[in-house]
Image 1 (spheres, rainbow, N blue to C red):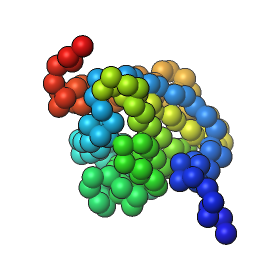
Image 2: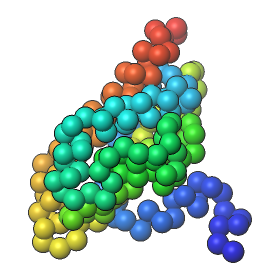
Image 3: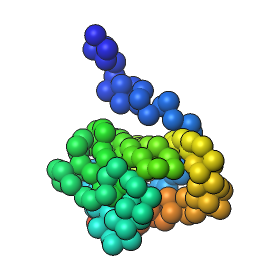
Length: 170
């Protein structure tokens, strides 16, 4: 029986691992994993609620075009452009999606680093089939737009989590 003896993190990783690696971005947050996790969900929900997010999802033909499902984010939740396929609170959130130019996964990992800090990493994996997919990759990844947007998202999560935690006391 598949998955009976596998660690949940290993089992959750297997399906999306088939997608080609695009990049990783990490930020260190002066907050514990539970605070970072909560901030991540809030920032993703806020970002998904913007009219631009739903409009873009509709424009490129995303499977998921609106925010639906349980909150806080859990397996079965959706945001414009993404659906949650795995949520291991305070550890890992896996968003997957697709549209006419790409199939993709965005994996967020939260790891305690000691001293009340956490590392938040966003890993992107994606396939861009055909000529249209290749052009889309050049426009989104090749221009640096994807990296900029991912770093901006991580910075928003960091600021929100650190606001909740308050000033560092080192």
